[in-house]
Every structure is written in C-alpha cells, then in structure tokens.
Amino acid sequence: MKPTILGVTIVLVVLVGLKVGLSVGGSDDKQQIRTALKEAIEAGKDGKAGGVIDLLSKHIKVNSQEAPGGMSDIADFVKKQKPDVEVENQEPIVTGEEARITSPVTLTVNFLGQTRRIRYQTVTLTFSKEGGMKWLVFPSKVWKLSEVQLPADQLPDIVN
Image (cartoon, rainbow, N blue to C red; front, top):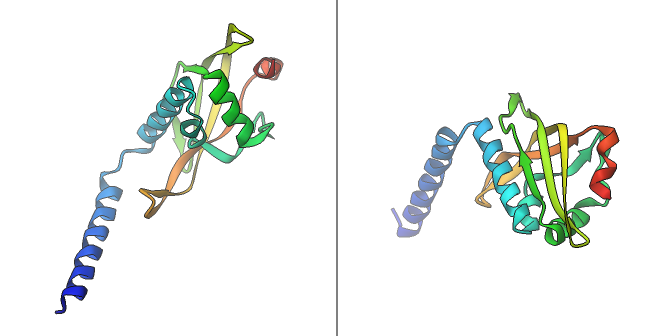
C-alpha cells in the first residue's frame, strides 16, 4: 500500500472513530442545555456578545414575535449593559427536539449609571435543536434558545 493511501486511510479511520466516540460519549440533552445556558449567562456578565449570540436561534422570538432589532442590537446590548441574568430553575423538560425551562428570572443591568434589577415571576425559555457543526467539522444538532415567553405586562421593562 502506498504511503499516501495509508495516510489517508488512517486519517479517515481516526475521524470516523472520533465521530462515533462523540456520538456515544456525548452528554445528554438536559446537560447540554444547562451548560449552554450557563456559558451564555457568564458571557453576558462579561459583555461577550458572541457567547450569548451562540446560544440564540437566528429566529429568536419574544412572546411569539421576532425579537426587535435583531442580533446586532442584542450584541450591542450585551456589550454595553453586561446583563446579569439569574434563572432560578435551570432544569429543562425535553420533548423530542424541543425543551422548555419555566422559572423566575432576575435581570440586572446598568442603565444611565444606575443599576436596575427586574424580576420576572414566570419566564418560559424554549430551546430547539438546530443544525450546526461540532468542532467545525462534524454536522450535528445543537440546542438554541428559540423563544422567550414572559408576562406581557412586564415586557416594556426590558426596553425601558
């Protein structure tokens, strides 16, 4: 066997083995969601918009409507405000390719030099599995936050 063919064969075997290992040894859906949520919350506190945007679906909705302003406004908000989000219950209920977390949520932001703390009693975070890439090589499905439901009477508090 020629060295080139042998090299390519070894690389393919290693990649297939790695893919099988990732599929079998991957964490469960609930853990993936909890980890992604935790990482996004930490990124938000640090003003790292990319870490927050990574969790969001490209079609994120708030109370069944497209998120106002889009991703660039969300990124600017995270960079400037460095929001601290506390989700009390981070245990998702997974049903197929959708998961929900219903929990009280506290949002703390700095607004015009003052710290503003807003508490929402009932917030529902809906996650959906969407196409993505693992390690930029392997096609996979990843959990993305696709919708946020919160009491309509408290919605203006986010904008103010």
